[in-house]
Length: 137
Image 1: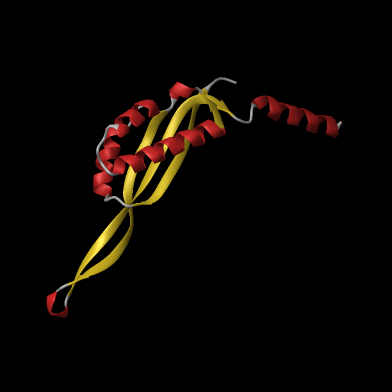
Image 2: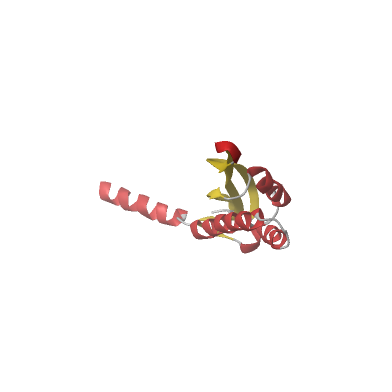
């Protein structure tokens, strides 16, 4: 079986950062290798860098677990930050009023690709097919 690009993804919901601020951090590491992205995020002084790094490492771990991937071949294919849930709150003000505000959370989606083979090899599939043919005879 020839090696081909395989995909895996991870999603972190409810990150307590504004989506606009988190997308600035995400734009730093789009279309880079995972190793480069981790180094960049380690040296980025933004609050969202920790959450983006966690999502990237989780997606890479999913890829390593599901497929046999060469360690240096993982690349960030897709990295998107979207608005999550909004919590509505109010601050008490003078004269019995209330000033409303919202806490907006973010959802971070990461898809990584790597050069590897599927965990279920074709040899196992062929053996299963041969077993079925023998039963039919």
